[in-house]
Amino acid sequence: MKMSLPKFSSKRLYNLFTCLCVLLVFGCDTGRNPGKDVIATYNGEQLLREEIDFFLPDSLGKADSTKYAEQYVEQWISLQAVAEQARREVDGLEDKVAFQLKSYQYQLMAHEFANWLIEDKAIMFRVNEAEIQGYYDRNPEKFVSGRTYYQILYVKTDKPNQYRVANLMNSKDPEKMDELLVWARENATEYRLDSTYVEEAEMDRLSDGYYFGDIRRASRTTTYPYQHKEGDTTYYDFFRLLNVIKPGEALPLNLVREQIIGIIQNQRKNTLISQTESNLVKQAKAAKKAKIMSK
Image (cartoon, rainbow, N blue to C red; front, top):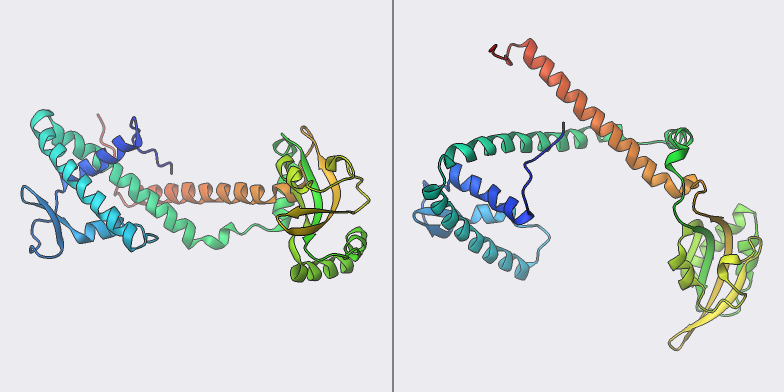
């Protein structure tokens, strides 16, 4: 169910067209009693407060909401003026706009239905570890690195004399890492203890104060303590390089896990929408609702 909406030369033109369609085909609700709900009028057409409220983003504060409403009113008046002149100048305008709006209306309905369907069937989009691993194993060509990644452990604290951190970071005992994590939560100003992968820019930042040479060439079996100052505060860093992924090498699974989850979920969404659409068409034809006239 592809939502291939009409294309226009710019976003502004597209918005203008959409609003113009509504104005030309539906107009405004002139049957409502005038009053405080009417925000503006143009040759008898009314702009109601509920229209502005419908398009008003929920996240805006009071001042921004007022500004948005003022801009909406100005645009509405502008569109009314354009629509008035368009009716005079463009031959067959009403039919042209009506056909395009009808098509656009059904595409919007299909789009909203697809969103509802995905939300209603949310349980279908849960992806387990076996599925992630399976996709990764079947598609190695999709997970080739295009840049360099560094897998690290890192702790930054403003507390001196914490050299036991280095011993904990060097340990292969999971309980030691758990102990370090508890300590970091209470004492570290920054830490990465989940075997994080970072890129060159992050390595540059972490190298501040590192005096063992190039941080990218650090031994993978050693935790290095070093320190640096930020203003008047001295920070104590503990860094360990675990792995390096170079361009052209396979990306590790934990680096592309979220990407794989997104791919699998999108495949399921597309399949769900496509199958639902196909079933609805079959049902409509079986019920004699759909009929193609012969030429």
